[in-house]
Length: 431
Ligand code: SF4
Ligand code: SF4
Image (tube, rainbow, N blue to C red):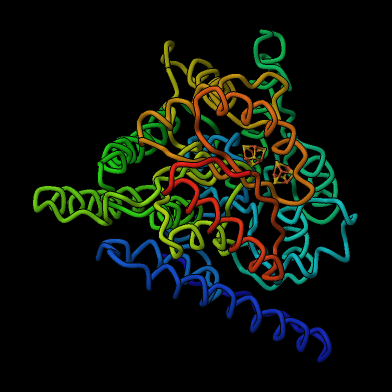
């Protein structure tokens, strides 16, 4: 497994800047990890997932992986991991939740850009995080405006593959173009790894991801238990860790966790009391270490029963439907899987997100929805009104919570979340 850290000669000023950055970002990550570990009913088998987050954000190491496998930074669930693995690289999802990197990016990006993109720009500028700086290629789907500008900004600095994603996925010609984008990405992958696309390597990579999906489907079934068997903050840590874990290793870790949870079910040792409000968290991505909202919900007595975010199950939930067992058939299946079932609001048509949320409400016995909007994330903010209307019809209370990447809004958030949980407990809607 690769443990390397690059050594570069820096000026004393730059060195001090990096040290300050590392101290601050490490402190935030350590604090979030401590708060996760301090929640009650933490299963023993959660440890490897938290250790992965620690490895990347506290120890500042690269992800563990077989020797000589290059990293490819991906910026959206629409980059199929199967393709990256097939061509001898490891995908790492680099959408960022770092407050410290956001502080740097805030001076580089326009004021109204979203904090996620500002944080990515901050990491790129400071160049101190191995998982960012040692990527051989960045793959950025052009989805929202922020991602579009990020793609251009990154492309001026390092090898970057842009993927044009169709805004509407119902037209065949648009989908055809996206398949072409995946082939273009494949050529760029081949140029960094020397491994051309073949049926055998694609099939093997699809097999590895199918194993991960199988364990995820077991995990999802366990999450549906009532009372809850695993807290939502723990589940979100599991899914965030996937971004930096070699897929077969993550599958093995999840298998062990699933086995432990099944044993807990047999012993009727559920994670929480039955009468706590069951919350669904949806909206803009929740990326470690920006776990303030999930932790706040659970520290204040709510149960984060489910989440619908792209750092959650969305990225792995749907398997590719391979009808034609050829390279082209698999590429088409990957293109379809990456876009057609995706509930990301960057698509113009998005009724499927409403259906998905309704399904989650039913499956997880949700009593209230917290809608997370990162400041400047217009695509998610646009969809709030439609969802609010739909939830009103269903009689499910919902609040829109706008946050940024800092701790300044914590008190205000706490008051709102606490009031929301109380209102659900006592069966009234927020006024
Ligand atoms: S929110 Fe949408 S565009 Fe952004 S990373 Fe997630 S799936 Fe991709
Ligand atoms: S979807 Fe929202 S959070 Fe993601 S990059 Fe775009 S604006 Fe930022």
